[in-house]
Image (cartoon, rainbow, N blue to C red; front, side):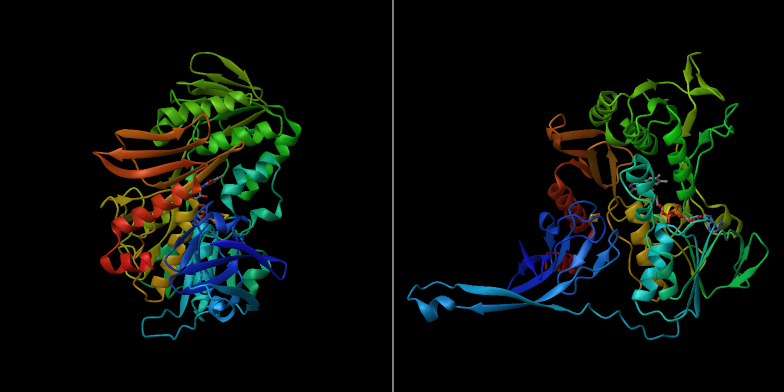
Length: 506
Ligand SMILES: Cc1cc2nc3c(=O)[nH]c(=O)nc-3n(C[C@H](O)[C@H](O)[C@H](O)COP(=O)(O)OP(=O)(O)OC[C@H]3O[C@@H](n4cnc5c(N)ncnc54)[C@H](O)[C@@H]3O)c2cc1C
Ligand code: FES
């Protein structure tokens, strides 16, 4: 890959075999430089959060990027050397010429199986990606998105990071502006909580008693924070963080208050701690584990993250839980009292499956789906935090709570709603950012028995591999984006069929 400029825009020039391509060089998700990414077949993978763009069309083939990059016509003039010199070598010149029109959206010809209408329950990562994909794939039927949230589909990862820290704008929270849904004829209803699904009559019933008929139904209800059940847990200064409204409330408190106790030392808790420190709030973190995030990331990385927070002024109370909360303090199990005018609880989430459960869908610590993301009821699909799907890498059913996975499942579910029969086999990916540290994690290691570190944590330059019984299950990287991308491709190859592998290799 080569980086250059055309008509004032950064352009990526890439060669695959005899073919040359020129596409926009900036990822449409958060603006990563694509020349630092990886070429895989006729695609380029983004170094930061692993979006995938087609070199041929510029299309964003996989989330988290939702918009295409531009593309340009490339002209190659070969064998110039023979025309002008006697040197016997193949040389030539490549010109990036005019910008090309974006590839037209697919046109979907309705078949016998195409639903007349699609109802999506949930206006989050999976629901939004599904609605967009249906339209991009040319679906012309009615799309209704029913969301219990009071705000438009939002970039949840931003809520505990840039937005809460004051580094990202209010606008950066929305996945799409309101006009997008109008322009794409997506009937998005906010504050619309679905109370029941009547599979027999093909209708959903909302909490306000209204009913909607569906041709096909997609459930993408996400997850709800686990409630902290202690005396004082419902006081007004005790906050949870799931929605944009939650994050806005935290921002306004963080502007006015100075002493926070964060209960929970996992991703949300620690990202909140880092963001509050960026706003100069005093932060104490309370968690039952001895080492933060040890279960997921291992002891070395967990200790490293702890030191990072301590270097930024956070005080930890580990191996400890909260006993009670009052308006000015939190009392711990050991009797210690921490002064707090703000308490943030991040002790995990549970999948929002009660709707599916009441409708009689098969449940297995999540909504059970097959490899096409279809539930036990034909014509009802599930995606995102609620879905437990058969993972081809481990051969076991898995459920994860990752933004990119939710979006990719929404995309796959949409295509399967249109009858594609596309297996969901994207390799799980998530990232976290705390202060200036970013960690990207590829794969899924619910349990591991060996952690190998290649490189140096302290130098923030390493690859951490998680194995079980010798088998590589997941890889985390710090400042080694390419290694993370290569690990993803290795996992993809490991689960691919021969035909898919050939496609991957280009
Ligand atoms: C603060 C925060 C930071 C995060 N950071 C990261 C990160 O850095 N990296 C990462 O990989 N993941 C991160 N995650 C996790 C990620 O955001 C989720 O995995 C992802 O949003 C799940 O998408 P989803 O569509 O399944 O659910 P959601 O995005 O939660 O959407 C669920 C939707 O369903 C609606 N809903 C629920 N019940 C009903 C009902 N009965 N009727 C109608 N609508 C209903 C909700 O209102 C909501 O609109 C973060 C999550 C949070 C909260
Ligand atoms: S910046 Fe490219 S995927 Fe996030």
